[in-house]
Image (tube, rainbow, N blue to C red; front, side, top):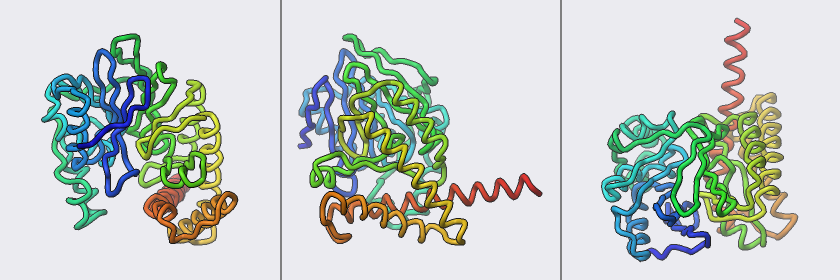
Length: 321
């Protein structure tokens, strides 16, 4: 049985074992009303059900399922869980609602990318009944009772269909991917929270990402509750570092793109950046398991940076023709 980690402030963390432990988690908030933040991909639903059972929470007592955005590693299990958590309202950004109601296009796009691995990684992506989907406006709040009021903030940069959830009680932000990624194994090795922006295609937008980070600093958070992966303290320093890295990502992309390169060359430059950063703290090789864990995200970031500059070039050509 999955045993959730008690993080205090009535927040519990559930490792969904998405591909492997320590990659994707969701969070339960147990106030007068119960909220589940993120579902992960559909295969993780069983771990959520086990966690609820271990906490003696009947399925019908979960009031809200909240997904920060519709990427399948965050919301792929929404339909599956909606069938089990029969009273839960599903909160999603307005741009993402139609893809929860009819996930066929979303699943087809992911299947084209992941091929034969799709079924293992994501399972069956089920629809959420339309009448159970709710789309909060930017700045809207949700009262969970007991003095706990969550707030939703639209946060483009990673994706246009993204919001984060601010929880003043814990002084934390449930960040999805808008505030980057935290790598658990490297953080444990290095003794500090090792984080990096999440910049996959097709909607990575550096100016929007920077603006999002600046707005989140204004909320004065202490903690960031990452979906990938775990809670980190020292939110202001993390947000500042992520802002610096987005600028570096953009500079790398511009340099490579101007020299005629593409995603492959950007990925090599990102690896050089990361290995230099790691080398300042510890001698780790590319073959170390905690470093190899970065491979997927660095590849996706390279593709997202390349896509951004290709889109900028295309837009410029259209405007000048």
